Amino acid sequence: MFSTERFLLELLLVIGSGLLSVYVYFKYCYTYWAKKGVPYLEPSFPLGKNNVEEVIKKSLFSFVGNNEIIGSESFGHGLEASDWYKSLKKMGVKFGGVYNFCNKVLVLVDLDLIKNVTIKQYNSFLNREFYSNVKHFPETAALFLAETEDWRFMRHKMTPMFTSAKMRYIFDCVNKCSLMLEELCNKAASSKDYFNLRLFIDKFTMDNIGVVVFGLEFNCLLTENTKFREIADKARRPDFSGRFQRLASRIAPGLSKILRIQTVDKGTIHFLSEMVRNNVETRRKSNIRRNDVTQLFMDLQENNESNKKFTMNELIGNSIGFFLAGFDTSSKTMQFTLLELARNQALQDKIRQHIQSVLKKYDGELTYEGLQEMTFLRQAVDETLRLYPPVLTISRIATEDCKLEGTDFVVEKGTTIVVPVIGLHRDPDLFPNPEKYDPERFSVENKSNIKPNSYLPFGDGPRNCIGKRFGLMQVQIGLVKILNSFRIEVNPNMKYPLEIGKSQFLLETKDIYAKAIKL
Ligand code: HEM
Image (cartoon, rainbow, N blue to C red; front, side, top):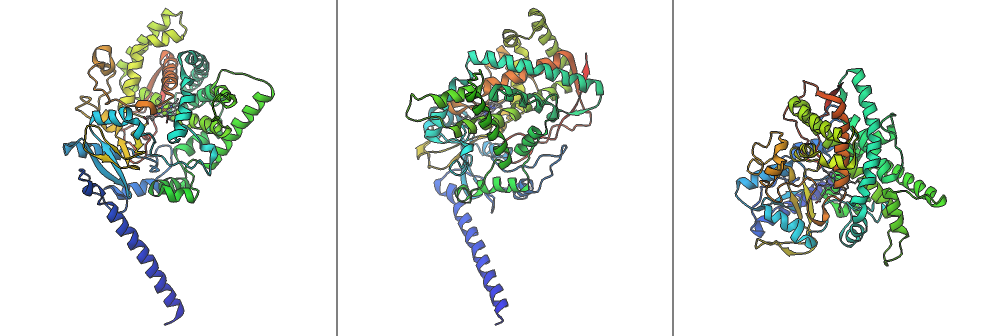
């Protein structure tokens, strides 16, 4: 036979047998839950789930534009976990199996099992289901991604970061930034146009993180600081290559490590790590001490008490981690609160009156004590975090074979466990009339009706959100500043209920366009 033809034939045979082997291997993986006698949702090749086309389309080919649903980069389990929750609940089971490509995932439905995994048996379910590659990218050594002993060490060292004493300092920093937020609102109000709420609020939360974490003025609020905007967009909306790398890290984490796949944009890591390095160097050279998180990291690094030292890479990785974990989650919470209050002007007025009555008590000044007294505002924020939890699911990996308390099932080491937070928060059996935005659910009288472990916007157990107090504080201060002086309206063309991006772990919707009217 002609040699080129023969070569092509052989090539086809090799590719064909390669694909067949992958198919057979995946089919074999898909027998796991049935063999274990665990109820499961029928998988489909190759993604392991039913919404194949949607995941591929949104993982790689989605539009990136201000008013489009953001591409789900498949960086974790998102709204799909809510569908799993609903289907398993319908089957009447406490937990069930699904597949993520060929990996096994256990989805929890029962609230006691959620408590067991996140709190009681947390030692056996310590790690998060996130790809990390600290060996090749040491500047990504962050608490969020850290595993087992590295995590224990960091969390222990970092726990005093947001104590009550520190929160007073953080209050002062954020309160100062909120003056610039007010100035920006004034500008927006005078233009009378609808503006993109996401771009607007991000500036505030980024500036707060700048001061509280890095001790630096990012100046996003009053300048068009495009570098931080670029970072924010890349974190949320990675380009095609970024999405591909995140997808690859989910399908084959082991192989991705060997291939040095990186899931956080290289330019972002480089820019932020240089910023931290210069900052630390300047402070050390000039003997500058500040009250911010960078100082705490520097003190940890210089502390020689234990054998294990907090390294420069951990200092950098955690600073970057705080930036990425902190600005978007808090910004989303503020955006959705404003959206719901704009949809219900009577509620907005009620919250404004409440805010103003507390401010009056403190001579019109926002004080730390006053903020604690704004309980109705806090109820609204809690309700936002129920209806729109910025982190849609929490996940754990079994770090050893372990019998799941309350069942006869032994979870095998390496199994992913998913807690479908958004599924729980919108379950009518747990939160009646779940689509209704109703801050009264969190009033003193009603709060006790909320079932333990059903409300998890900050996760649960020792691995919960370390920045919760900071996050809540910046959200509340920002809302006080806006609602005290402005009426917020949203573009009447917005469609409800908001469509949520399907397969990413952070909640994404179309951008909200709002108007500020000076009171
Ligand atoms: C409203 C704002 C926020 C929300 C809704 C939120 C939510 C969450 C959730 C759900 C987790 C996972 C918890 C778990 O797995 O059990 C988490 C972890 C984390 N968050 Fe937040 N977060 C917010 C703000 C912040 C802020 C402001 C920071 C820091 C500046 C921060 C830093 C972190 C870190 C470092 C972790 C990993 C903790 C660990 O692994 O030990 N978060 N957050």
